[in-house]
Image (cartoon, rainbow, N blue to C red; front, side, top):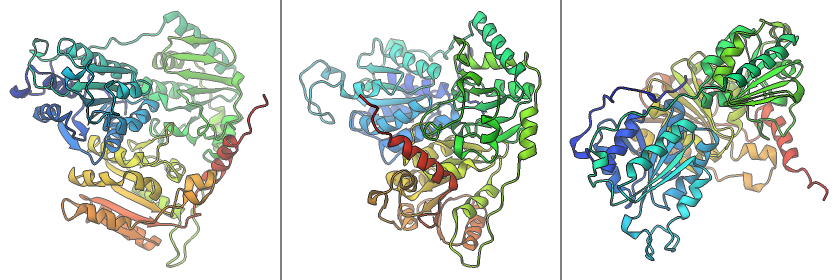
Amino acid sequence: MEPSFGIGATTKPTTTVSSSSTGSLGGHLARRLVQIGVKDVFSVPGDFNLTLLDHLIAEPGLNLVGCCNELNAGYAADGYARAKGVGACVVTFTVGGLSVLNAIAGAYSENLPVICIVGGPNSNDYGTNRILHHTIGSSDFSQELQCFRTVTCAQAVVNNLEDAHELIDTAISTALKESKPVYISISCNLPAIPHPTFAREPVPFFITPVASNQLGLEAAVEETAKLLNKAVKPVIVAGCKLRVAKAQKAFLEFADASGYPIAIMPSAKGLVPEHHPNFIGTYWGAVSTNFVGEIIESADAYIFVGPIFNDYSSVGYSLLIKKEKSIIVQPNRVTIGHGPSLGWVFMADFLSALAKKLKKNSTALENYQRIFVPNGVPLKYEEDEPLRVNILFKHIQEMLSGETAVIAETGDSWFNCQKLRLPENCGYEFQMQYGSIGWSVGATLGYAQAAKDKRVIACIGDGSFQVTAQDISTMIRCGQTTIIFLINNGGYTIEVEIHDGPYNVIKNWDYTGLVNAIHNNEGKCWTCKVRTEEELVEAIATATGAHKDSLCFIEVFVHKDDTSKELLEWGSRVSAANSRPPNPQ
C-alpha cells in the first residue's frame, strides 16, 4: 500500500477543532498533525513539553500515546510512519531529544517522515548566560540541535511567536516532500499564547507535484528500452526506495508490460505483491531464495528499481552483478550501464513511460520455472523433540493472511522472515539499512497503532528484546492484539555468526514472567512458554482463538546454534568484509 497524507487537498479539513486550542501555537501544531494523517502521537512527558502536550490532548483528532522511554517513542513513530505514511513523537529538551536521536537516525536511513517535536527552554532564556537543567551545563542550548542536523532534513527552533507559524509549516512540509524526519523545538512558554498568525484554520498543504525533465525522461526511456529490448533474458529487481518514490503502482505497470521475472532485494520485502505471477523471490547474493540468485546473476540485463547496495544487502560486497549489464533506477535518477546517468527523471514517470516501449520477454521467467524445485519440508519431528526454528516458521507461515503484518527484528529473524511467502495485502516491515537491535518493540507498537485492521506478528530475538522490552506495557495499555514470538536462544545469534565471543552471551530472563509482571492484571495479555512443536501448535491455536483479542506473548525456546543456513553464509561473508586488512599506504 502506498500511504497518502492528503497532500494537495483543496478543501478544509473535516476534523472538529476544540475552541480551547483555537488561535495558539499548540492548537495549530495539533491540527497540522491531524491534517497530514497523524492520529496518534508517541510521547514521554517532561517539564519543557507539558503545556504543549495539553494542547495535543485537547485536539479531538489526536490520541496521545505515552511511552516508557524516548527511544521507544521514536521507534513507535517509525513503525507508525511505515503504516500511515507519516509519524510523530514528542519529548523533552536534550535528555529526551538525545535519547530519541537513535530512533530518528533509523527513520532517516529508512526514508520515513517522522515529525520529532521537542519541548524547549523558555524563550526568555535564549541568548542569556543562564545554565538550565536537562543540559550539559553550558549556556549554549544548541547541542541538541547540532546533533539532530545530520539525521533530519529540516530543523526549526521556535522561540518567537512571530515566525512560529512559518517555521512549523516549513518543517512539516519538508518532511513530507523529502520523506525524512524533521526536528521542531518549541519553547515551553509559547504553546498556549494566542497569536494572530494562528487565528484561523490552517490551510491544508498543497505540495506541488514534481515532474520529470521531459527531455531527460525521453532519453532515459529510449536508452533503457534499447538495452532491454535487445537482451535475451532480462530481469527486474525491486529495492526499498520504491516506497519513498511512491512508485509501486508504476512498478507493477512496468512489470506486467515486460514479462520479466520479478525479484526483490531483502529490504523491499512487503513493497511488491508476492502473489504476482512473475514474482520469484528475494535476490540477496549468496543467500538468495533458491534459484533466484542463479536467474538474476546469469541475466544479460538487469534493471534495479530503487536499490541500496550496502555491505549487508550485498553480502559483504559479493554480488555477481556487472555494471555494464545494469540499469539503476533511483527516485530521481536513471543510470544505464557505464553510459548515461540522467537526473531529474522520477521513478514513477520513468517506469510508466518505459512500460509502453518494451517488447514482452518471458525467457528468464521460463528459465526459472524450468529449474525451480519447491522447498522441502522440515524433517518430521520426534515426539517431545526440542523445537527447531524451521518448524516455528513453518507454523508462522500458516498464520499469515491479508489481515496480518509481520515485523522482523534485526538478527536471524531477518533471514527466517525473508523466506515467508506473503499473501496478498499482508504487511511486512524490518529495518535493513540501520539495523538497530531493539527497534522492533517500539516499531510494533507504532505499526499496530496505525494499522488497526491487521494483527501484527512480531518475531523478536531475546537479545534485542532486552534493549526495549518496557513498551510491552504501552501495547497492553493501548489494547493491542499483537502476537509476539520471543525467540530465546541465549544470545546475539547474528553477531555470533559474524564474530563470536563471550560478549554475545546474555543473561537469561524469565521473559513470560516479566511480561506477566508488566501486565499486572490490567488490560488483556496472555503469555506462554513453548519448547516443542505440540506446545507451539497449542499456543498458536490459543492466540488465534480464545485470546484473539489479547496481546499474546509466546516465548519459544530453541538451541543456541539453531540458525538459518542463510545466516551462516551471510555471517561468514560479512565477517570477511569487516576483517579486510588496511590498504597498503
